[in-house]
Length: 304
Image 1 (cartoon, rainbow, N blue to C red):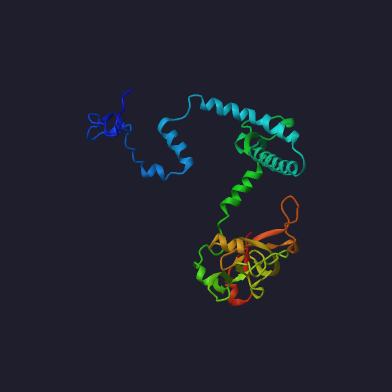
Image 2 (image 1 turned 45 degrees about the horizontal axis):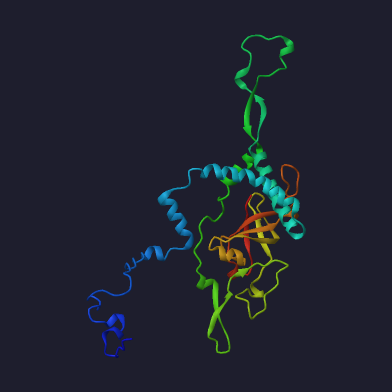
């Protein structure tokens, strides 16, 4: 047995033994490739945008159209299976949605359906003499025409923008809204009070004052309008049904703000207007022609 002292090189660790020192510039760890810097455009992209980017670069699967067609064909059976199994409130909501879809589909089919009509043809008369039993027959020509519903809708679309006041002065939010400060030290300024005339329905209920953002003063609310019929040249005091469109802003429309040029809906059942089918007209649109906040009343012209 050979005794080895602490100064013997064989007792030293492997890394510091003479003749086994690591070469300069080398480490014991394996060499790693430096990480590639990520593009800032890719790192900031949303998760869903990567799919679109990949689709733009590489396109879709070759059988994408066929798979989409088959999925759409299976969708009918999937919806039918769901409709048979669903119960309770979900069933009510589902049936209501399907009823609306079917009604829209039936309307579209009905509007685009064509029917045969007969009308007199002025140029189809006989050039020579005809027997007496043929005198009561008139020249008729058959033509395909669209249904009256489409014609009526085209007329309405053409005359939709023919209003008494086509252009109005823009009204800014600083003119319509007044900033109300709240809080113990009056530092919060998120509440707004409307300084124009507004309309609210009969079922309107205010929010708690602490949480109400847009305040509509009761003194500036109106429910009646002086509507002039342009053909009869007569003015009627009619109840308002709602605010159809405020040309200034969709926000004003949702809040019921009434300014000059606003389209309002009024109840014309008292006038006795009827449709060609004989039904009583309930509501019609009218355009406001004055500044209600200055005059204290709403003057409007009926759109006929």
